[in-house]
Image 1 (spheres, one colour):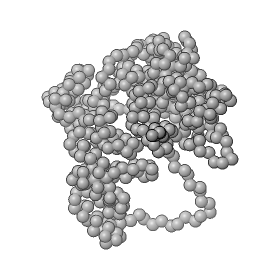
Image 2 (tube, rainbow, N blue to C red; image 1 turned 45 degrees about the vertical axis):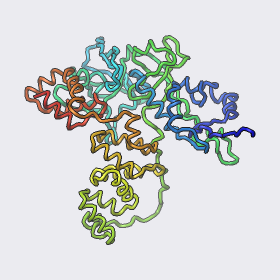
Image 3 (cartoon, rainbow, N blue to C red; image 1 turned 180 degrees about the vertical axis):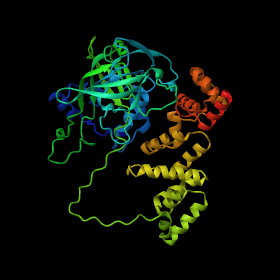
Image 4 (cartoon, rainbow, N blue to C red; image 1 turned 90 degrees about the vertical axis):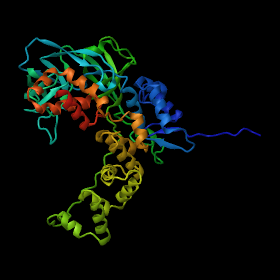
Length: 510
């Protein structure tokens, strides 16, 4: 008998071209720099961009082997890359589009050396690097707005922010060139806030990264985006050339970036996380005094939420007169009999009036709610997560989630396995990947830290690092409780149970 041949599907990704013939066309026509161009899906290109074999294996193991052709969302690959680089990449400060910041009340000519952690506390790794601080610094242009929009949390005239690892500063004025463009910001600093904490307990809304103007290193930074502007470049309409879908902004080169001096010893292929920017890898084109970094992946998933297409404006359409919005009671009174009865039943089970109204009038949400109760018989807990899922699904019409999975998520939260904050991250991953909540918890390591035995070492470590604040608390400044709770939550990676944290702190602080 002749052997049977099995055909398996090719691994296709959105915004990528897998045809070797077409990729060769791009190389021959010099639309890319070569087969190792970091925008290409070749192994050489991925390696030069900073993607490791571990990340590629992880995403392949996640999706499995199929016989039916399908297209993998690029966001899933990028998430695998982030998960791989997060624990491996030391932190560094880098300003990609510099704007000078002058601290007018800082001693001229003085250079102060600050110690900055190279790894986040939750990584379990230790180590610091020296970061010079001086009167003249560089910050990102995008971190300043002369007329800030509502909700702005960065620097603006009269606004105080925190400089990462350093001090609080307040913008007092701007300096312009002959054309009127802003070339420098003038600020004052609070010398008592070294390390980013205020002795009087005041809080600021924003934290900015920065580098010293005199001691920072010049560098070229290459920001890579998708090579194509459409999700399926292999499937262009008839009569249109696939090369017309090439992204003109797939590579943006920033020649004037500034980096902290510790990066002078970086080696080609070594990866770093530029704080608030993304993961970057030193390119082989680098030379002494002329560093070149490639962005491997940004910190945020640009593919998680696609902007909605704007509807064309309707001209010359008279506005309909609007009366006052009906009260909640009036809305209930107008419900059909079946929905009114459902609202009454749901309210009797302990749901808030908004949740009860949603489930009584939205068949899809009600179905999720009923299914979730089969996995966890707690209407109030289940309603919270069904409501959260319904809110997220509005912006993601393609995403799906099973009601039973939402019930399992609620059960994990009620059992103390997950904190409420971590549960939101788990729900996001459930909508993205379709995995069960326990599988997401296990893969991301999000199990809650609860119980005195587990929390005591974390609390003790935080208190040992802040003896002055402990003394002030014991002297009567009970307002520092939130300060300590926040540090413990940060040290636990956001996975500590806040109620348990307060109990342990009360014991330790007396």
